[in-house]
Image 1 (spheres, rainbow, N blue to C red):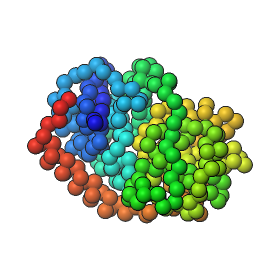
Image 2 (image 1 turned 135 degrees about the horizontal axis):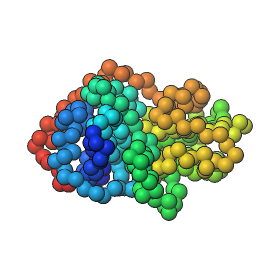
Image 3 (image 1 turned 90 degrees about the vertical axis):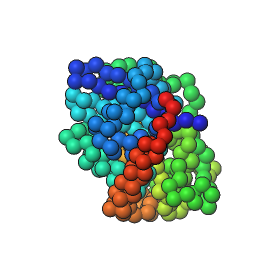
Image 4 (image 1 turned 45 degrees about the vertical axis):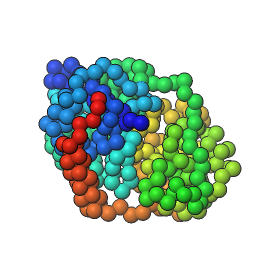
Length: 280
């Protein structure tokens, strides 16, 4: 197995260099906490490569624009994709990159190409089937994990479901998702520390959704919900909680503890990387 990652370095001239590694997506955010100079040195050790990963195989990416001082990144795994560490990780990144505009690429590698003025279709996989994870029953062993790969789906004012977030965000299913949910077991008040979610208001035909990682075609979801109003909340799970207070109530986040734990994880990763240089 591997966790593939693309890096892009944009020079002051506007020219860019593309890098690829089979390893590094899981922990990409921790690596970037070393700051611009160290991150740039790490990327350049890989050697330039012209291979763009598509939105199925690209598990993380970072674009470093040296002229405009923009850091654009995303990952499928790592503390930045975990609810209790998300805000702390992004705050620490902004502190480690002072004067830089740190942004999250919710649309994955396509968003990096759009930033560069390139055609995003080059990294799209339009032919794959829309398949999302199964419904998780209350008491499912997967939910015993403190941070399960799970999407919380609330419907109206009285139903909450949990979908395994392993193949694609359930927002991709469109309104057909409601039919699938009708055959599942509701969870009552859901306290899962999820990494994705959506709230459906069938009466108003409105849906809002969020994700802590990335979701291919993120800004195209209204096309999948014909006749509905679709709002993309990016990483704002708090909006979901406010709209469904009796359905979704994740554990409280201790921000100071989260900052300390992310710093510790970054330090350990740096120590490990000095002992082992992964194959590119």
